[in-house]
Image (cartoon, rainbow, N blue to C red; front, side, top):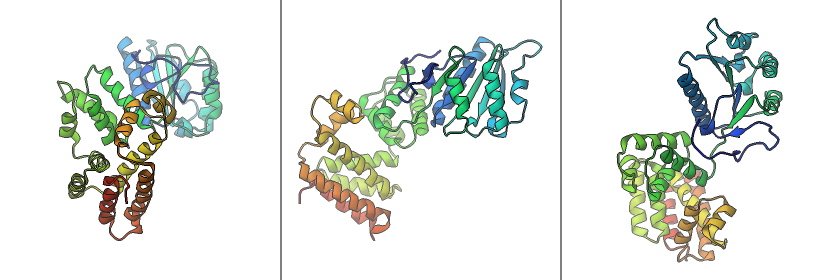
Length: 343
């Protein structure tokens, strides 16, 4: 149904007897389990299946059931064929909160799915409905699972954003892609929306200048720019960036978080040896992150990194209430980082 890498997702359960796919690989099946906490991917998978079925037959009937407020007989009613035998898509939400009645009737349905009906079950996590999940995962030949895992690593978010542009045949420079991911690192849904806006609005190749024009005001982007300047030893530039960020409404807490992310990555890479690709695999990073950390480490010593980490811990506490002047604490941290941890 959709182009993309085939195979079992990273979070798939090895014991499953059914195909376990990523959201963009969803395809029609009598039973489709959409599992995992990432709501964006779940919504895309369910919408993609609906659009595919409707393109095949515009008479598709779509019904929605809330498993958490289920009334006995609902599933049988909507799954029963109509007079003209149109195909039916039954979307069931909140399976993780399902009633006992839904659990019992869904298990019965699974034993004999209705003809020309597609049952989609959305389960975001938890132990409720475990018996049903196990039954679905053993229903070889009549079910598939779409695994919607969270993207926790920066490398995963980078790969996700890269795929967004590739699927739309839109070109983006590696630097612009890194900048975009840094700007929306805390929210995959916002990152996806930003990708789609750029895909829709930008006719030419997307560059770092494009990202600055669209999202230069993002606190995260400003924070990383301040951190980059300090790590490169540009003390005055980092202080000017800090003042600009604060004047634009930035809070010291995410600025310190940006410093912490950069310095932690540097510390990890400083103790690793081998090609960037190998180090990236060992540390769960993208190769470009390793290359960037190696560049950032130029001029640093292990002792300097240690002092920077201690200064980060003190500053983090200060901006979260332990100090009287959070801004002064961040300015002091910038001085330590710009000197590369030297006394």
